[in-house]
Image (tube, rainbow, N blue to C red; front, side, top):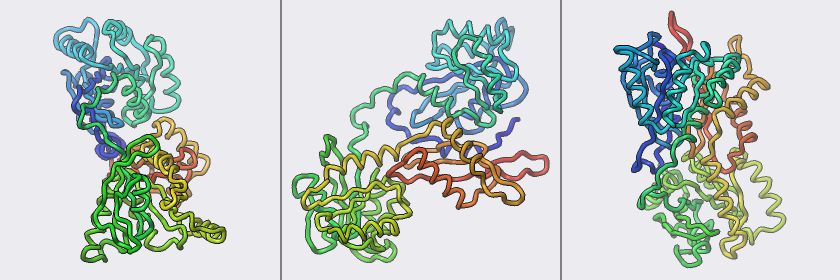
Length: 470
């Protein structure tokens, strides 16, 4: 049985996204078809992210229509593995071909797999005629394109008349992300989300140390007294939810208690207030961290910012009480920002005054920018082209006689964006920070934390194959 060079179970956990409301509608069906032994079951395993379809070099292992649940970029669908299709088949082969034809008739999208190393055969050309009669959208996949030379060979498959061949390596994952994107594009539109489960207003947590003006800002945005405002710090204990219309959109704001201490060192009411505030941040999509522009950025401010970053939420820093800041303070504040916020230069920053309303209208565009970055996805092909160019221009330092290389990279998720690099060996933390910095320079991600992790391939054992660490 063929083995995979990377742990697909881990890949599945990191690449599949939570369903976004399509569970109540019909799930699209994708049929994977082709002549025997072109790698259909290997491709199905790659799509579903786990070794479930039986894979052997012997043709005819798959005989029936076998459905599997799959998920890509938040869209659920069913992928059907089929046996090898052949024209004029007899006996058992005829039954297998009939099952494949039934799968095509019931599918929304057909993925037609051809072996790049062999090219188009008479059986493939006969299959194309059958596929045209089905009037279903067909994606032509040139499998076993394990390197650039074989990708070029795949261009000969234009002769089949099914449009652009998509070169991939189902075994190694090469091109699989772009293929999945194309499958989603070919699917029928997602059904409308029924009333009651449509995503509500975006959730925004107002956080900061005590007395920085969180409740005042909420009242300013709501244009009424929604939260108690007092010069005595600690007035807000429980999170206060408010629906606020801002810049033509309704938002759900949560005014939280001021965080003085770490949760594990707080006590009594403050302890429970800290827990509720932490829960409010976890439940939010974006956090607006208020800092007092007239005071030095403190350790408490740093703890609040760290809690938001560790929670993986989009981040907007609002310097409040800007109406009280003079030229001298602005000069020193710029120095403080360079020094104290150097770990999060990507955070969106706005200068506001909750008391006077100064620049409060800039808050909504800032939140939208942060959320857009938080949900941004980079196409797999573009990501791999970029990482290849980066690591060739600036290779990893040599360790143990050789430099570790990136075999494949993928964006495993969004909200926040998470990237996984499958490599030949461990990466130094400094080089990983370099990759993250360059990733931001190229693709932005303003206002969102991002995660970049490495899955080094295990060393070869006696008679074994290299695998990625799980």
